[in-house]
Image (cartoon, rainbow over all chains, first blue to last red; front, side, top):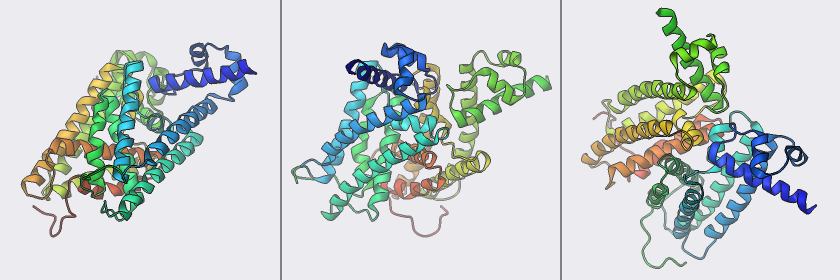
Length: 205
Length: 205
């Protein structure tokens, strides 16, 4: 039991690393198993198909990222400062990836959206759910900021979509230029999208 | 002469269509030649490698798109209205693609950035040049708007980057949700990023 569960984790970890580096289409099951150090036969014991593995990688990544987002966005600071922490945390993740594999690997969900959403409806549906969750998490913070009179937006959902779109666009540039500092512009861009001024005074609520 | 030149065009057109639909990594030279209706032997007469073909597809696409952008952004209207035309033209292109192939295929340059920029340095360099040109074209219009006092931004290049990032992010969502109407938010988002109000009065300069 211990060993088979370990093999599943090894396959997932290897697949995540390889998908981040080279995308999904370029990978074969044999290569994933080799990188994971597990026999190819065991792959189909855990995963019905390469697509099922991709969905598992996406779920694993989103489970971890959602926890991080919840911690950052549910913190004690003023709402706008919590959004800033989200962008800083995103830049930190990209910098850590760059240190470990030499390149900024971008957002797994954005990467797979552009690579796969028109080919695999199950992956499209899962990615839609994830981006809807991201927008909803940001919208809740924008609403809090609106209740405090910190921002001038009328439609908090539309504003949250613009912020998540801006984040995806800037992460794309961070990947293209292999430079996580591209994300340093996010905070000012977010404030502009929200019709907010740079908050003054203490960060705490 | 006429026939060989025709074969090159056929390969380019087929490759562009297939890359838009399924990305680059999933394609083989044999499949591209089959879709183009040319013998596989002729591929290497025109292109040294699949990578060389990808660069040619990128150049062809950017040559056409740059002309479109230059027409739209160099028009007779007020600068901010010209930016709106750019977003409308982008949505029109995505809608036309959706009508012809059933799905919003997104931005070829964004797609290839996320799929390939960490694998192929020649493609990364070409895509960097293209996005720098896009930012520069938008920056020139933002500068015009600033000279007229229409916008409140301090750094026109940073603002242009934010607009192009927003466009890439919203095109990603248009692709994910297979809905080009996602781009309808661009105009309001762009005005917010520029610290501009919705212009009043006539659109002409």
